[in-house]
Amino acid sequence: MTVAPPIPDVDVEDLRCEIRKEYAEVAANPDRGFHFHTGRPLAAILGYDDSLLEGIPEAAIESLAGTGNPFSLGEIATGSKVVDIGAGAGLDSLIAGRLVGPTGQVIGVDMTDEMLAKAQNAAAEAGMDHVEFRKGYAELLPVEDGWADVVISNGVVNLCPDKVAVFQEMHRVLKPGGRIQIGDIIVQKAVSEGAKRNIDLWKG
Image 1 (cartoon, one colour):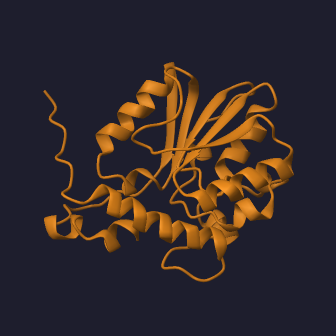
Image 2: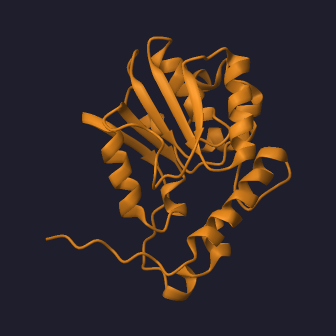
């Protein structure tokens, strides 16, 4: 029987507060310069084809701060229902929105108000009424059971101490036979207990 890994001893509310501060800054000042790449340069590094970015409002592109390319992992069909966990300024949600078309539906979930506002404005600018954004956590998605054909996420699972809860939520919202397409960070060696309690390392 597989045993779930222990949840790191970190104050989740303090961690969420610091993550919100960091990504509120990415939303407000994407060109400031961070210890991670952002925007179009990051999209190029992660292998986003230029065609994926065509017609997407620049405000959504400039605040990209992901770690991978969920669209490289499989085709998202017209008419699909997609959940984007940690949607940020909405780039991946809007790409998914264009792929599924008006007969599909996309729900982007994020916990940072500044990112949500930016994503909602970008969706309105793009005229994508079938893409909506909801405030929530990866561990408690504001999405009904069995709703989604595909769950995408980009650089978010690594920010969540209780990763089992995140994947349980993905499973809950997916239809039978649904897919998970995520880009994230993995480590080659165990992280020390001291490092796991360092919130600065989590948000970075």
